[in-house]
Image 1: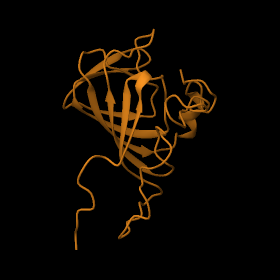
Image 2: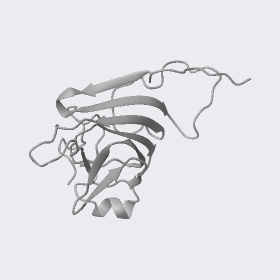
Image 3: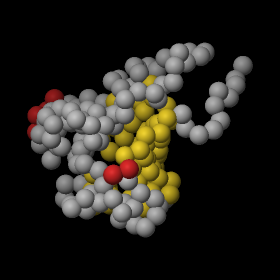
Length: 173
């Protein structure tokens, strides 16, 4: 029998007020294939805030990027890379995806697929931008990992401003 387990606000939201970013954790899985059980033993999103999904798992969240929180480089997030495939779907507002040598302005309805790339985010508009991210744990091919700048030291392992967020303590570049 199918039932609705939850119909309301997301179970876990975390804010970084200084950065103007909020993370609304919807669900994540640990392991692949994902184990499907009749009743979850606990709240799957009640874990330490980390950008990448648990290995080898998945994560879905909604990020809110509020305007007016850019650093001196015009960025709202640190430049980072994760060993994951990330599907981003813009729900509201506009958000700039900042890459090594270019930028892409994404608007509501736009979809971006990131495959372990160096990137940062910036809301340069006047209204909040909301983006759904589905993150799937990945693994860099050995040949690719050998030529990536900062590899593997530049991978983001924790939250965006947490000590030890990057393997080397420095953002990938």
